[in-house]
Amino acid sequence: MPPSPWHILGCGAMGRLYAAQLSRAGIHVVLLPRQAPTAKLLDIEITGLSHSRHTLPWEPPGATGPIHQLLVFTKAYDVAPALAGIGHRLGANSRVILMANGMGYAQQLHPRLPTLRPAFGTSTQGAHRGSGAQVQHAGHGATRLGMPGVPKAPDWFAPLEQALPDCRWESDINSALWRKLAINCAINPLTALHHCLNGELAARPALAQQVRALCAEISTVGAAAGQQAALAGLQEQVFAVIHATAGNRSSMLQDLSSGRRTEVSYINGFLVQQARQHGIAAPLNQALLQAITAKEAAIT
Ligand code: PAF
Image 1 (cartoon, rainbow, N blue to C red):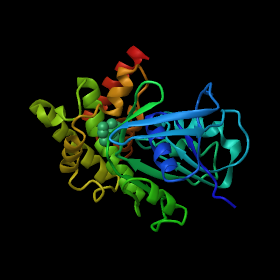
Image 2 (cartoon, rainbow, N blue to C red):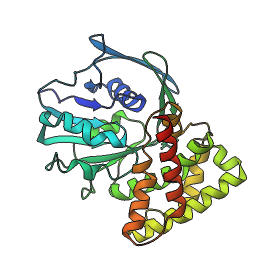
Image 3 (cartoon, rainbow, N blue to C red):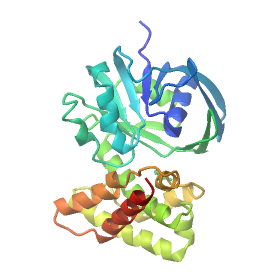
Image 4 (cartoon, protein in one colour):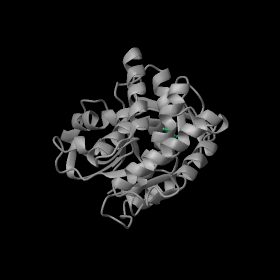
């Protein structure tokens, strides 16, 4: 029997970049776009750091038939509603990998999909949509996948590891998710509020000082939540990401600039919730959460 396709839910820039990378490696990919395209197949043209063209099959929102393997690239706030929409296609053995930024969305799945045991992923690849079929591959990066309580990579991971650049199984995915969360907490809201590229957070002394103060607060909250080891050397890591992605517009800046809701409640909001749960204050994250939420309310 041929291997089951990987369905891709969330067909924004990152979903399309991963679809292209899997397809290029000969993996059967089926897209699940939110709105049915007019053409029978969906074109993707990768430009920028890599170049390829793909014509991929897609299925409409109302499709039936089982989904055995699913990669989810929706925004954090869309994970639960989007998965609920295809819940009838998922079985007890369906493999589901959630790739959204932030934390806290997985808990929202439980009421509707109580038996689902998803894997999680983080990505530092960068991509944004160009015109028409174009996706700009804007940043080389790594993909880390893992499942809580599954330290060794399962068999199904091997084709993904071969297909995706710098893709590894993470034995402790929860720590990896916390590290990515902490980096997003420090970079995303500041770039969105100051309307600046990631690199300016290091180049402008006043912003660099805010990043350092935020890192200290995030580390304190992380330590209270038992994540001290995961967040060791956070400030150095954050500045390393700022330098590596200096020319990037963060996802939160892109969301606000396009009049879209941001993921702030799953990023700084999650951190503030953790702080509250452990009885400590997180005034810097709280202030950023409020400022971004106010901006969202003004534009969306
Ligand atoms: O959300 C983002 O934009 C990215 O996760 C990161 C790493 C901050 C780079 O822009």
